[in-house]
Image 1: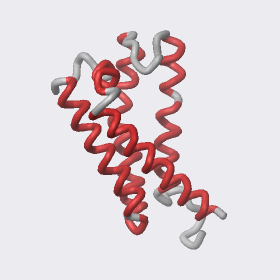
Image 2: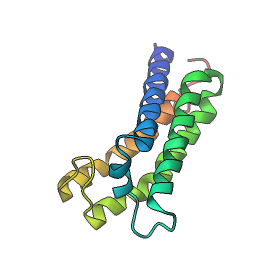
Image 3: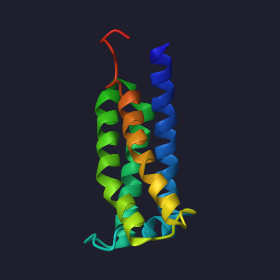
Length: 133
């Protein structure tokens, strides 16, 4: 049963990452630009395009390469950690994006990033009780 849940988690997160990456490159590009911290030294649009491409690549790999799920799950978890300062900056700087138009909403969002890390690790098989499950 755990392997079914892990497979479902991997596929769902992979598809979500592909969707988020495509949104970075198309319809939500400006929303994502608003989340790039003011202190980040790379152009906002270039940052959004680059992160969108990374998200698509990781999402496709998570879906299409189940034999590499552990590596890709670890990379996804690391990616979520790397982009977390952007979420913190959105809260600290009071930037409205994606309907996060109050400090309370922006603060609550911060608690979802660790869940994405756990989701990626679970889907990647990092959180198994034994090698055989």
